[in-house]
Image (cartoon, rainbow, N blue to C red; front, top):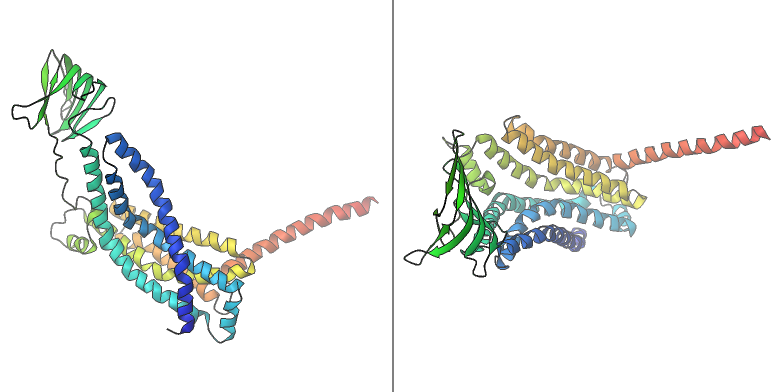
Amino acid sequence: MGRVERYLLRLLWPPLTLSLGVVLLALVLERLLRLFDLVATGGSALEYVLLMVINLIPYYLGLALPAAFFASIFMVVARLGEDNELDAMLAAGRSIAELTKPFLLLALVLTVFGLYLYGFLQPGSRYRYREVMYEALHSGWNARVQENVFADAGRGFVLTSDKVDGSGRVLTDVFIRRKANGIDEVTTSDTGHLIPTADGKQLVLQLGAGRIVRESDDGQIEDIHFTSGYASEDFSVVTPPFRARGDSERELTSTELWAAMHAVAPPQPYSELAGEFHGRLVRSFSLPLLPLLAFPLGMAAKRGRRAPGVVIACLMLLFLHHGVQLGESLAETGRFPVIPAVWTPFVLFSVISIWLFRGSLNSPGENPVTRAVAAVENLIGGINLRKKKKPAANNGAAS
């Protein structure tokens, strides 16, 4: 690359870093409040919040990267235009296509990174996030019950009590719900007491007078009253291990998705696997299109067309993001073929971006968007002018 290309890339790094940092911080802070509330309710250690936030960064980075990359190119080009540097480069014989080339090269590098981010880093961090959340929710259960807090003891067993003594083991007005093997069971009791087993490694919940209401798969309801008893569950302080990775197609890497798609007996429906696989490709391959969109809109900022350009760009990025999500949903439900459903938003985004870029090659600073905005402004200005002339004509007739 020449001196001009290196200069353009040096201008790009500060706004790109700043944009990524601001967007990531905003997204993480929004989730951080909910995570603190979750951990505080479960009585878990705050270190789980840090681990969950770390595992959320790849997901939020995937959301922030396209927007930050576009915004940084737009700001660089707009600054070059305001400082007349862009005019000097064009006057020196540089074409718009040549000036866009370093941004396209960087976009190709980001595309390779995007394939790794969406295809390998995000699936692993998504699983680890859920694993840490599971540990946070269950680490709070230390065989002691908190007043008016639902404690998940695992295996579908949920326990709460209206009043609890200082030890957390003597309970009043106990409510238990257990769902396992197709049976949904609710138990209430006046009192409860967590007592250790003979070996001292586990606890058993001893109940006073109470009632059991049980519904089986066939819809039969059993209503049982008892004067005393034990809950058929052993409460261990040790958290049961979390499930293996791969419960969802979003936890599979791209290579695992490809192998599952072509397996004789796919672990999940083919439409779900293919929709997730193609969605990752679309998000990665859309990055090289962003310079083609940002460069003409950034040049138009010098002519006072910054606001329309930003609005159009935001709408297009939202269209691509939500269009791909909609396509994935349609493909996963089997309502539409996978490739047309997922790739149609990408094709439309590509056509509009290339159309805008080609429209600005002959007239720098002008593109179809600026011409459309100018036409609308002229139309509105003409209407206002005619309205002003009519009262003036009426006043002349009256005199």
